[in-house]
Every structure is written in C-alpha cells, then in structure tokens.
Image 1: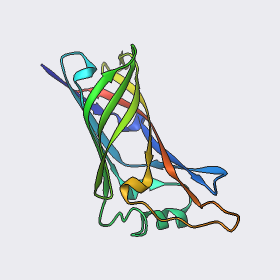
Image 2 (image 1 turned 90 degrees about the vertical axis):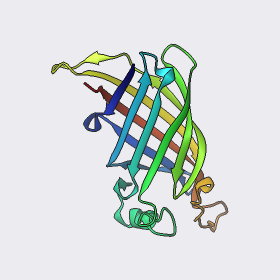
Image 3 (image 1 turned 60 degrees about the horizontal axis):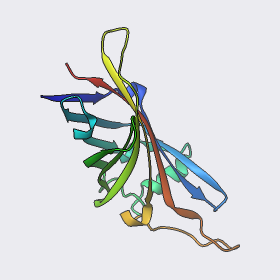
Image 4 (image 1 turned 120 degrees about the vertical axis):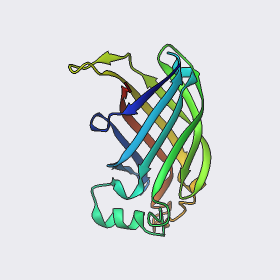
Length: 176
C-alpha cells in the first residue's frame, strides 16, 4: 500500500548560499515551491521524492541582484521557470539519517546529486493531521548547471564561488 505525504508550505523553507567576494556568503530563499513523498508501506527507504521550485520566486533581499540572477546571464527564468528534483534512491545511514540521490534540474540541465536528509518522528497536530519534517542539506557546483557568469576581482580571485549550499527545512502532511 502506498502512502502519500504532501508539502505543508506554511511550515517549510528552502534556501541557498554562495560565496561572495570570497569573504562572505549571499543567502537566498525560494518563496514558491511544491513537494511530495510517495512511499510503499511505512519505510521511507522506498520513497519517491518530487520537488519543484519557481525560479522567479527566489529572493536574496536585493532587488537589483535578484534581477541580474534571474536574467539570461544566470538562471534565465523566462526560459527555465522551474528547478526540479526527483529522487532515484534513498539509503538509510543511521536511525533518522538518509542519503537521497536523484536528479536535480536547473536551467534545463540535469545532474545526479546526493541530499543529506534528517527525518523527524511523526506527530499529530491539534487538528488530527499526521505530520513529519525533514532537514535537508546539499552542495552543488553551479557551473555544472550552466551558471558560469563571474567576474575577476582586482585583488585576485573571483566575485562568486562555484559551490552552492542548499538547505531546506520541510514539513509534510499525510494525505487522507
């Protein structure tokens, strides 16, 4: 018997960070995203995870920077409006810790990535809904997805790092 879990968007957040000037990070979040988990039986090791974010919904709290990142020079959100992740395997590492492998698609380019996922226990909310939460981290190289724009600094180095750290705290509700 399959079980479906749907994203509780009001209790979820997805963010990222990338090095800037090689001395600090720029952080951003996605405002609009969906996700679902479908698994056979009670084991999450059988899960199929599907995630999609609207690329035009991200914010770094700087309108000018966001406009540049959304442009054709970076994400080209008009041509590639979504980022997608679809899992292919889930391996239990410890009691509540999993490695979820799957394809991440950004700007029309799909690459296999591993997500480190820490699962909570389930809980019932005051309205009788069964909930579960996941803390998700990953690192990807932005140039693998065609995000190659950069600028050389006068002092040496580059304006932007290649590594993007992804962090999500997501809560799901058991479908009735």
